[in-house]
Amino acid sequence: MTDVSLFESREFGGDREGPRLLITAGIHGDEYLPMLAVKELIDRFDASLTLRENLQGTVTLIPIANQAAYERGHRCGLDNIDLARVFPGKPDGNPTQQLACELSDQIRKSDFYIDLHTGGTELCVLPLAGYTLHREPSVLEQQRQMAVAFGLPFVWGTSADLPGRSLSLAGDSKVPAIYVEYLGAHRELAEALSGAAQSQTPDHPLVSGCLNVMRHLGMLPEIAELPPVACDVVEDERPEAGHMQVAHPAPTTGFLVSHVELGQSVVEGGLLAEIVDATTQTTRQVLSQQNGRVIVIRDYPRINQGDAVAVVVESGKAE
Ligand SMILES: [Zn+2]
Image 1 (tube, helix red, strand yellow):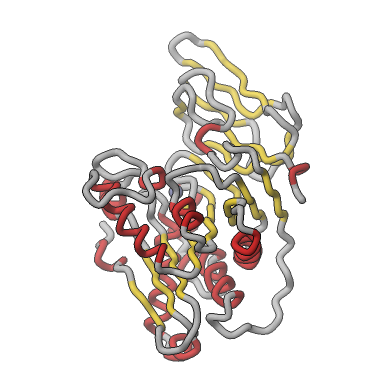
Image 2 (cartoon, rainbow, N blue to C red):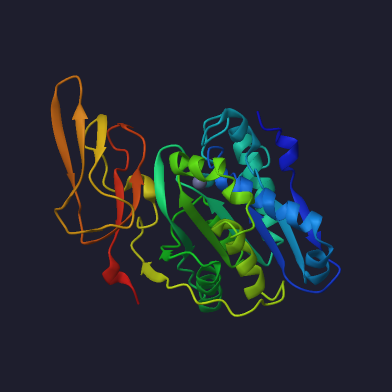
């Protein structure tokens, strides 16, 4: 079993003027590649004097924000409360609310924030950088630029009205913030076992993405011109657009057979998945509610009624 103390939070810099950047992973305890990526960043700053000397400002790296959930191997800690629904938390609340309160203090004292996630045990998400459509144009534009700078193929701006997230707290505090999604447990495992997060040739996209944002913010020197990554930017103001857990809800509980792949284009009415109810031997179809691209699928065969089957993003929503 991995020793949690190996994944201690660390802070680097502070000697040279520059912004304060906070990077968190493990808000959910079953999202592993981001934890490895943040640990990799810590190891690199520890190992390289040049990197530390070049750093302008301060970077705070938290590889496992929710240690109780990590130790349980679950999205949530023992109180079964989703940390990403209770920000800003309560100092005298349950353990998860108290943790949200501590993290809120960290976010408030930062100038910029990156929160790394995956689809966890059940979902698999197209690698993307997301942000909220902040009402203040300067914050929104900084978020957009950070998301593009991260360098993943998909950039997604969604409503600022989803409460309880780390990004909602950042938004309320006017701290420009992005979140990142990168696959999910079943595909994460293949990458983690291959040592991808610790490989420097090439960097894992989660490691290089954080470094890219640091360069964009002027915290690290620019490196030789890289070819720009073609990224698809979609902004969608509908209130529930960014809430992955409620899209295309399963009409019944059963065994899920997906008919689409991540990134695939689908048309309205197209078959996303079938759910087989083993007890009644009936099959229900789940059809796409819109034209667009599949950015989230469920990677786990068992599904409960009401759980999200897939998320489809309407490409027509792009600016
Ligand atoms: Zn998550």
